[in-house]
Amino acid sequence: MYTYKTEILSVGTKWFSDKADSNDIEVLDQLINERAADGWELVTYDYMATSMQIRGAFVITFRKQQ
Image 1 (tube, helix red, strand yellow):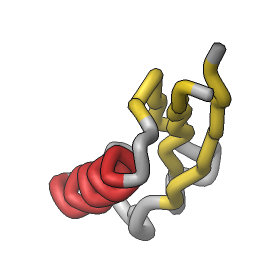
Image 2 (tube, rainbow, N blue to C red):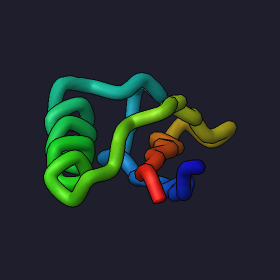
Image 3 (tube, rainbow, N blue to C red):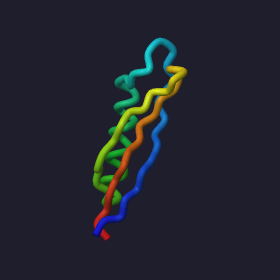
Image 4 (cartoon, one colour):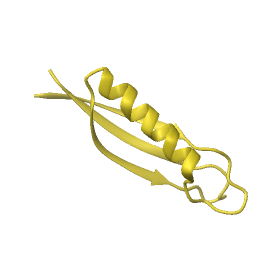
């Protein structure tokens, strides 16, 4: 059995594009590596842009064996 944990990671402010950039990916990698060090395994993630195209976020789900 697993325990699941979902987090929202906001990305930098976007002015001309709603896409994630290399800085956002670095922050995502850092979070994944921090959670992995605590025993969490990445299950899935998704990038969500906002309708205003100013600030999006990653929704990230991890799991850990109970």
